Length: 184
Image (tube, rainbow, N blue to C red; front, side, top):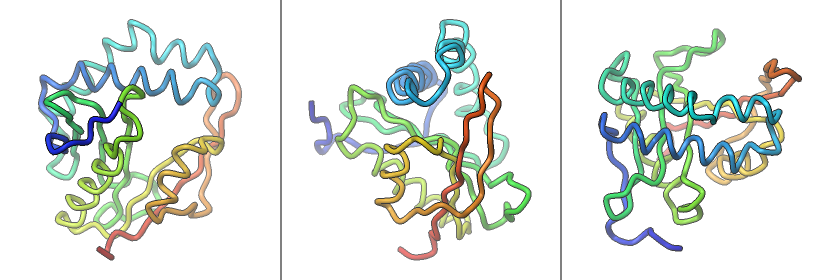
């Protein structure tokens, strides 16, 4: 399926997009994280109760962001939401939130993958962050998530040497990736 024609683009999310964003998140996590997260954790964060909670969170993120520098973007194709990205000032203690931002998430519906939506979301994110005066962009990825690491690596990202271990019933390691966004 290709859906990257002239009617594909990126825009700011609206409250009405929250259900589509949550649905994409659940499908993308079930597809992409099935070998990365413990099954019980994945079931819990993608189950019916979690889906409803995600819908509420994404509706709030679209309608009431904590600041103008917190944004939720959606990729659309033929007026259908097919992916999303969220970014905000970085919260890690070793980063300056005045100039460092975090790509909190970037997910494309597996049904619409490999059509350029992720690249469009990333480019739009970087453009907005540059306008807001950010110079560095970071994101956390599961250490074994080769798809995300390859996608970001292809866009010039690299590990910055920072790692963390999440307790998900078993330890799951994440690494922080970063990129300089001052260069166009």
